[in-house]
Length: 395
Image 1 (cartoon, one colour):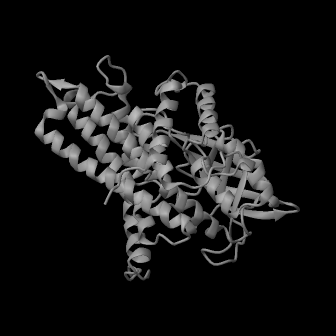
Image 2 (cartoon, one colour):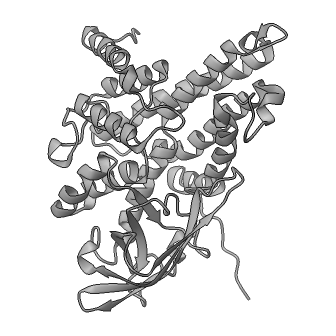
Image 3 (cartoon, helix red, strand yellow):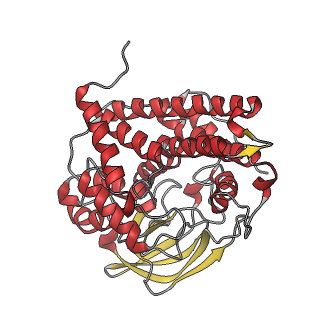
């Protein structure tokens, strides 16, 4: 079987490579990039079809027809060049596809384009202190007051809440409904009176998560996405896209390329790290897994374009992706030896400490977005049809 690209896609491959070379001076730096640099790069990528490629122009996308191989080529060329990719965050990667699937025409036209452009930053109001893995147990609630909902409650582990302009949140709007019913999916401004954000510092030393408190926060009823009281269905659509974002094969491919470069440049006693047989063997094992993820990603895109359900294939992405990314960072840490344990300010830090930060942050992602244990339950029950674990009877 010939897996080489045909003439059309070889020409596209050359086009992407030339674009990256011609615009290298516009790449946002990996460390210390300004907001203006990042947004300008995102705009350039959308204009050229390297971001928001298949989203309609009416909603701020590029408007290209779906092409599985073109998407693969873009990811490969960006990883090979070490170029900064398109923005991927909760708004772009999770909310936008949810709105395109379930939002009203007004919601799509108002929010999709500025979100894709990076001009509007979103956070996700899902987890609560008593409703993390058991999300449907959420207690944040809303009562009706005229044309508004009045929201009270608390969210936790809310990424980017301190920087966000907007939030998409799950709120219980029907107090007497069953556990998975009565939940509505709302979007509203983080500048709404009554919202308080408290940073949560993690082991990385940074406040990457937050607590968010709602006290009599007024939100118009028109800001429900989908159908009122059917937010659980909308939430699951968003969770599907979150799993895809956290298990993005393009991100793993870019990280693999960076590790290969690191191991090709760093030496111990005059020997390149990549020539060490133990490290090289470990690298090759991870490389095989990255390749498997890439081709698995093509399988998922193929299913989506043909209107087929990917079934079990879609359920393994988050689990495999987060664990693989953490193991890739672990290899970089181990390969660096004593330099790998440095953190903070040091003249000997490699990549400004990015590998150390990734190692610790990715360990958290194995828990965040649904713990590995929860993911395995989902795979077993929904994907493999195994019986649910019996619940204990409380006395």
